[in-house]
Amino acid sequence: MSDLLKGKVAVVTGSTGELGEVIARKLATAGASVVVCGRNHALGEKIVEEIGSANGVACYLPADVSIADQCVSLIDQTVERFGSIDILVNNAAHLGSFLFEELQADDWDSVFATNTRGPAFLCKAAIPHMKARGEGSIVNIGTTMVYRNGPGSIDRLAYVASKGALLTLTKAFARALAPEQIRSNWITVGWIATRGELDYRGETEDQLLERARETLPMGRLEKPEEVADSVLYLASEQSSHVTGCELNISGGLHV
Image (tube, rainbow, N blue to C red):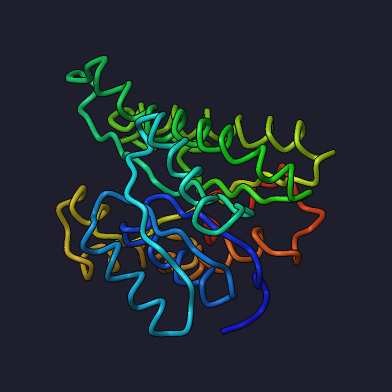
């Protein structure tokens, strides 16, 4: 445990997913009171129990961030439970992997609802509380795919477009909220062997690791812990003068 985030309250969306869980645990270890958020109730309660066993503070609040009312309710419940919100990590994501020729309007809308509209309404609900505190940190989890386009990008078009919109939101909030000492930053995440990525590619972790050694500039996949460390930096006072940043931790995948 450390005191880097002592007295702070953090919401991590999608933290019943693999990457979000690691982020939530990292922030709790740094002393923040953490809201674990997602749709997997059993896993959410398990994560909270384990954080508590490690002398951290956390609670589980179920929410589907693709539904605007649930975004508002999540922030309201956080403030009711802990008295404030200081850190918002928009990690929940919908990969939206559809064959382009089969893409439907509902598919497009569902991806944007999670990846763009959800973070926008979460920020809308959280910002007044951050203003009242005189500070705050918004951290948006991004992707290299908004900068580069491989052969399969067309089948993730909705995902890429929605994340590109999230990057624009990141910068808009950064400029607008700087006078309020509320910071808004983006992390350019590289290639991580999460369960979702393995399922999407139909590969084992060993197969993905072998391909990574051959194709990635640093010869390895990114670790969820490296993303969590980056979130901790942007959430803490160590980055007190950093806003509108695109923190590139992709190991050379995006240069």
